[in-house]
Length: 125
Image (tube, rainbow, N blue to C red; front, side, top):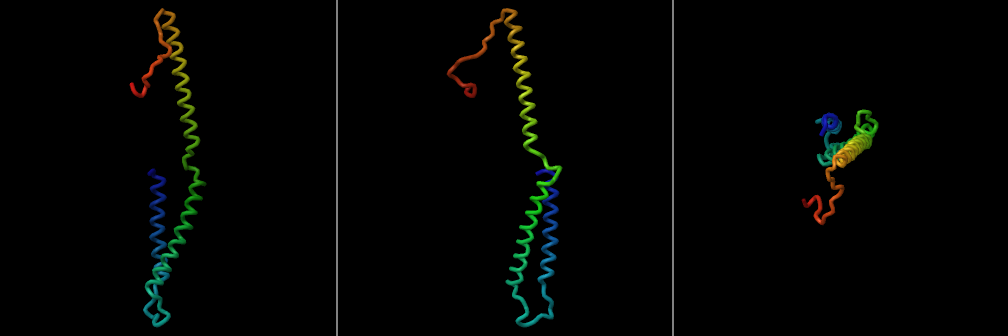
């Protein structure tokens, strides 16, 4: 997990704790409420759970939207494309070197085997 994700997770956890405290305070009843007006603990717990579920859903949507709009977010497609280009360039340079090396060896009458035909695969060897 990188620093960006860690910071986002810590912020979300802190905001969750703040929101939970706020919701619990809002659903807390004073001692002056008596009789039928007093909520049952199950009702209070359900109200808190429903409100927190709604907050989580909204926060998740906001976080996803912010992640898409974040200019610091790494663009993996561009990174892959750059690596492919780098590897392709390295391979072409290696092929050019080998062609020159083989031609130099042939000029010096050194026998060069271009391809090896065998029943044994390179992975096996």
